[in-house]
Image 1 (spheres, rainbow, N blue to C red):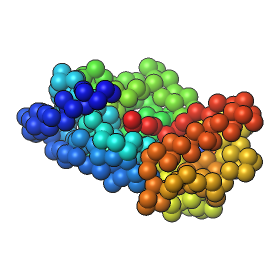
Image 2: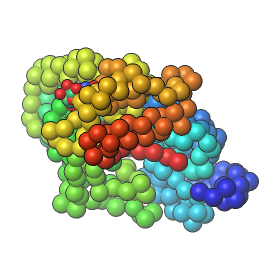
Image 3: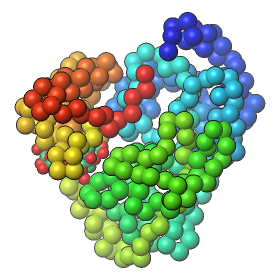
Image 4: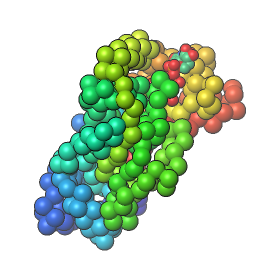
Length: 309
Ligand code: EPU
């Protein structure tokens, strides 16, 4: 984004306030991204908007487009790397979306701002099976759909039957047949605002699901730095039989640091940050890892995390 354009943006904060006020969308201005991301880093963002209905979300997207204001969907910030400088954009959070979770037989329709672990637990308690492996993933349902989140052999795409989304400013209901998912990949772009999804589950047993979830949580706590600030795995696995974590570990890079960013000694595909870390530190460490992996293996590691520059 050019500097001069950025100045125009910053010189007109009122118009952004006016847009949100006119649409009755609650908004917080100039928010530090370190409070909105699990890596606890990143600069100040111009605005975080919290529409509370799908219609307001769509109207907000249209208004931002009309005013040439860049925007991005914001989930729980658990897979997000936000630049250090001022971020001249609006983050649209769906945490305030008032749509309830609806259970209907083996199906559940859930708003994007809902917590994935909470959903998994609720389904398990109702004897609905099919999400157990996703219980330890600390993100929003919308974020999970966007990246086709997965763990322990589960992928959310396996149970998706429909997704409601704001696309080109319009509310659109997409059936599963219209959606192609792959490993950590969905058909949604950064300009689609996922509003809700309907999942098709199986009839299960609450006790069995509870035990399975407890086992996945135990495994995660044993193999991943769950108490550190991180964004989960930084890179996608290059192949199903080749884990990025193993490659980085075998290169002896665990514990390497740049500034306040460190390759986790627990799991090499995690970068963890301390209180002094800057996003530039994490980006530099990412580049160092990529270079080494390219040099030694000829493999181009692809980022799993989303980057806001
Ligand atoms: N390994 C090492 N050293 C390490 C880390 C892993 O040698 O530092 C080895 C392990 O011993 C194992 C293999 O690499 O043989 C795979 O490791 P792990 O079982 O931890 O799984 P992963 O492929 O590294 C994937 C997902 C995780 C998910 C786990 C559990 C990706 C990029 N990561 O990790 O998802 O939690 O499986 O199912 O697909 C995430 O998406 O953010 C994430 C953490």
